[in-house]
Image 1 (cartoon, helix red, strand yellow):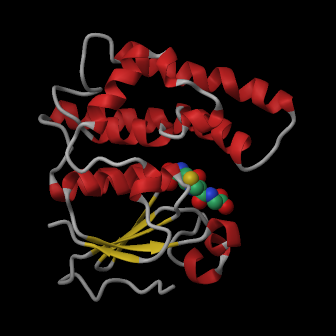
Image 2 (image 1 turned 45 degrees about the horizontal axis):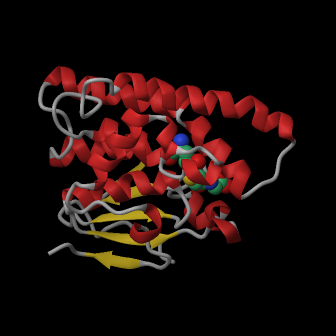
Length: 220
Ligand SMILES: N[C@@H](CCC(=O)N[C@@H](CS)C(=O)NCC(=O)O)C(=O)O
């Protein structure tokens, strides 16, 4: 795998580093799919510890996916990537200044809270932990989804009247909730919202969207 930057500011092609099973990778992947933007995907195989190799650590010092490069810029942390993409392309940014700030606020909240859904899924699927650990995280995960459930009462999207990075960021990290034993139908507003997202042109679920190998993606 190469970690080269794009050839320079004149080359605006986006390069996204990510992994097939990663909800954090799904978030920018979903954004790019919905916005129908071209980019190069570079796989970082977490199973083989590629994220901790020096070449990749030079891209993402935290040793995690995702990472985004464009020209001379390197952006890491999935929510910062979403914010960057919204600011630079205008897609899913929010219609007003207030909406743009509220969308960023949701991203900050999700990093504190929906991350518990990701933990429940991670410990269910990839790493067995003491049941007491699950007893700790499960109510936090349920609470995060319940907060979104209430926020969606009487509205279609988290911010304003159209989908934004708030929806993509929050949904993107809860997408694997079933793998953590969380049945989405327990939260009817969240379920309906997920179906609205699924109806957007370009939408796909992670295992249909994230390539297992490096790939050039050029939506027509
Ligand atoms: N806060 C980070 C979290 C990224 C994250 O947890 N990535 C996971 C995959 S979903 C990862 O790279 N794990 C490998 C590791 O930590 O060794 C973000 O939102 O980008």
